[in-house]
Length: 263
Ligand SMILES: C[S@@+](CC[C@H](N)C(=O)[O-])C[C@H]1O[C@@H](n2cnc3c(N)ncnc32)[C@H](O)[C@@H]1O
Image (tube, rainbow, N blue to C red; front, side):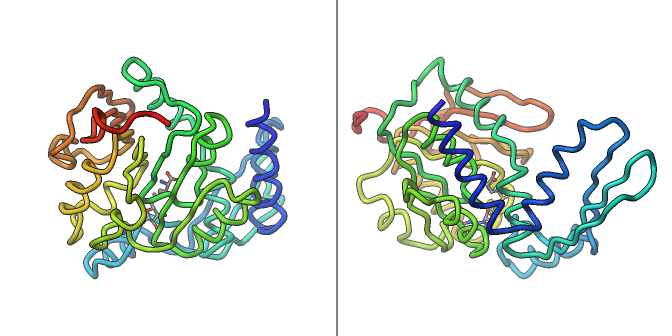
């Protein structure tokens, strides 16, 4: 109940600050009206742009490109709304319209081995606009730290962070030394969602993967990459694993599982 209230305030803040994204979210609600359709039209071929960014080893995975929300009713266009790349597109894609079902599913999968408790520290190395971290904080009472290299994502995350319950940083998680400075004592959970596929081939990933396992008790992972998790996070022991609609959900054991006791 309290979690829902906190979440509603976060949503309101994001909707009021990013009005176009807010309008897009409200239009989505109209999809319950018979005959009403809302679709997102991208103004460029995002696949090609992504491939080029990958070749140049630029950061990828954020809300890429301007987009237009086009709504029709009974086959007639009734409105169109342009969302420019940056904070508006990010608020739309990675906050207001980002479902948390996937996070709830991995938590349920993990629950046969671990129970997440209030006060435990969750770290997300590619947190986007923080949508999932807020679930850990508001509904499960955790503490949280999120990093994202894309500044507009952190700006949206901070807009929702009115109570400063989450610590957000805008930088690359795979730069040497980041984990040591952000998690000097380690953490209880590393939560990784839709991030490994963007980062796994970049220089610095392998070292990050080794260090992050040493810095936590458990890892909760959601990824659509086909690569096996025991190769991507080779020091961690897989405790639970499930593939659903092409997405891997897993709980892995980190090195601190024996030493760091829950706070
Ligand atoms: C597909 S989004 C997922 C965001 C969030 N985990 C979610 O599920 O909503 C991937 C995110 O990874 C971020 N990212 C890419 N490279 C990164 C890096 N080196 N360090 C931190 N974040 C990075 C992108 O900016 C983007 O926000």
